[in-house]
Length: 217
Image 1 (cartoon, rainbow, N blue to C red):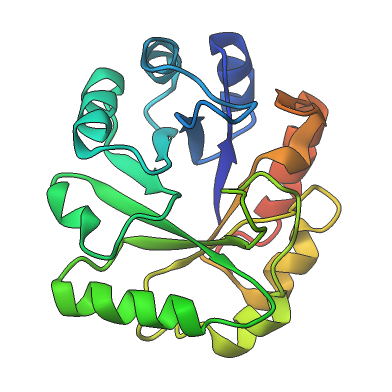
Image 2 (cartoon, helix red, strand yellow):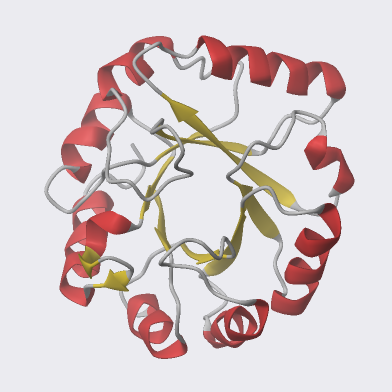
């Protein structure tokens, strides 16, 4: 089970979370977010990570040049597009792995299906799909969950990229979420915070431990 802890803002927190054994740490470059970090600090964080833990840059409606600059400065090989980027946008970054975040509401996966169909036609299918809850006007970190049962029924594993589950996960529910929809990976941010934008190290450890129980599922 691939585990990403997103929204790390300082070197010391990154160092301590690295010791808990996640697979990736998310660096959020969306400045309106309480988890936002600039390229300089993000580069310092990335430099401290052990090789086994990958830094992932989260971008929301950034320009192509900004994404290239951030990736180069921080030594990123994977970026997460978390905004309203069109299906062909990823073509500008053939050297990067792309995690495409798609927000899903109660209306199901039709919009996701249309988006991925167009990606496929353009040759820009993302490497991974991160499914988050749709909350109007928000780009993530809301603490709202997606219907796990709907994902289990409707996510086309044979056609679409590996599923990363996000949205409302926490140490108490991540095991149930994994059991319900069997994602390739899980991503958490607000669910392991003591206050908005501040990671609680005990919650992070409990989250990683709970998710690791399903290693290889």
